[in-house]
Length: 100
Image (cartoon, rainbow, N blue to C red; front, side):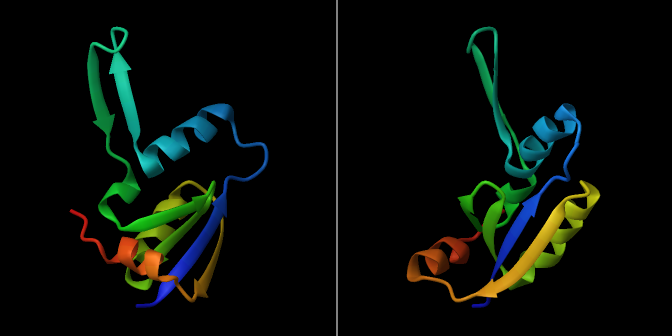
């Protein structure tokens, strides 16, 4: 399995609204209202793709998923670096899982 690391961040001077909205759309968000009475989850883009988040703005993904991820990041005008890496056994387990 070929594994890629994707390093990304928003450009400097990005408005705060975009800085808040971007991770919600990428990773998803748990939402509650009425002081926790109603809870639900807003689905994020990466929830349908097996990935491993290493650090803020750094994820590991399979090579076959890189195209759709780059398309998503391009829509948000992010600054992106992609590199192929040699994965650890734990990384292969995480990336081998099936997602919807």
